[in-house]
Image 1 (cartoon, rainbow, N blue to C red):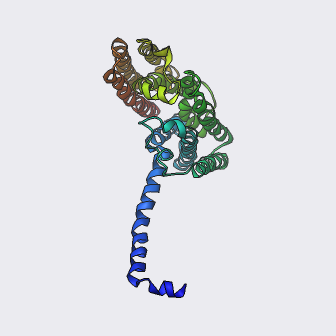
Image 2: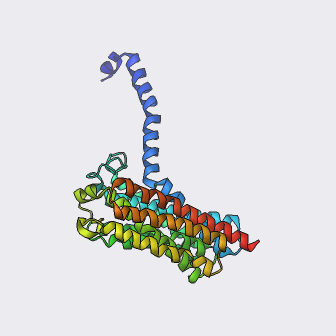
Image 3: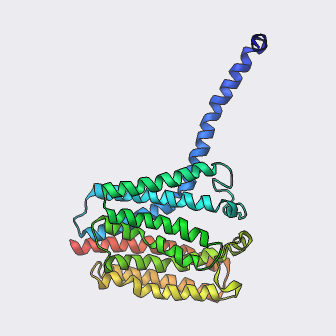
Length: 315
C-alpha cells in the first residue's frame, strides 16, 4: 500500500485538493439557493407584511419595535415550515409538472429527510418562540395556520376542488396573527382583516389554476372547478371580486380607517372586478394573467393604504 501511494505523483494530490476546494463554494451556493427556494421568500415577505399591518392596527398607536420583530420572526419561521412540509408532501406530483420540476426536491438538490427536519424544526421553534416572546394565542394560531396549510390543504389538492376554500383559511390568517401579537382580541377588527384576505384569494388562485390546468390534471390535482366547463372559473372569480368590495370596506365601518383607505379599496376593487369580468368574457391565458397581476397589485396596495390611513386617523 505504501509503495502504491508513493507511486502517485504529488501533482495528482494537489489537483484533487484544488478540485475539492473549488467545488465546495459551488456546492454550498447550490444548497443555499435550494433552501432559499424552499422558503419561498416572496410569499414569506408578503405574509410578514400582512402580519405587520395587523400588528399596527391592533396596537392603536402604542406599537413597539421589538415585540413586532419577535412576532414577525416567529411567523416567518412558520412560513418556512409550511412551505417545507408542503413541498415534501407534493414532491411526487411536483415532478410531473413543468412549473414545479425545478423545486429543490424534484430536482434532487435537497433530500426528503432534511426537508422534513427543516419543516418540523421551524414549526417547533416558531411555536416555542412565539409562546415565550409574544403570547399564547398568537403561538397557537400560528401553529394552526401551519397545520391547516400543510396538513389539510396540501393533501386535499389530490381529492377535491374544495381545497382552495380550505387553503384560503391559513392564507387569510397572517394579519390576524399580527393583530393578536399586539394584544388584540379575536373581535370584529380581526375578522375584517381575515375576511379581506380570504375573499381576495379566490380570483387570484382560480386564475393560476386556469393557467396551469393542464399540468394540474396531468399530476392528478383537483384544482379547477366546473370540470372544464367554459365560463365557470370566470363567473366564480367575478362573484368573489364583487363580494370583496363591501368586505374591503369593513375597516372603514369599524373605524380602523377613513375615506382615503375607502377610496383606494374601491378603486383597486373595481380593477379586480373589471379584470375578472374580462376573464369571464374570454377565458384566455392573457386575461387570466391580467387577473393575476391585478390581484398582486391589490393586496399590498390595500394593506399599505389601510396602515397609512390608520396612522393618519391616530395623528
